[in-house]
Length: 144
Image (cartoon, rainbow, N blue to C red; front, side, top):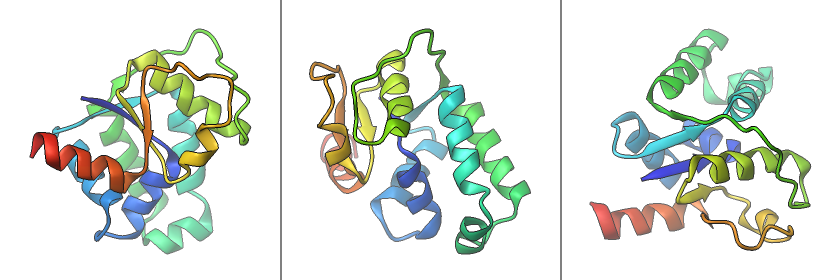
């Protein structure tokens, strides 16, 4: 199963080992789930995770963040976005996740801000937008 992760889900996974986001990250690292990643998504992850206030919260150095991102890229299904989808989402920065999910044929786009993805014009996208908790519940029900 291929999934696309919004940055907020990856950040939540690094902030706490107790939540669904962390469990999803573990499934990716254990190769139970395939992460879709594009260059813009990778740059977004790097930009957010290397902010000084974020590094302090997740208790990681920039080098450790780079190591984690290198590992995710190694394990990920890399996709190239050759065209831009602009479904007029509330947050323009969320479009890169829609493009990645669409291009990679992800079954799910996992985000804590699901409401932000339901306002655009892209109504017939082939993936479901779920919260980490809802996705992990579904995964455990169907695959664990």
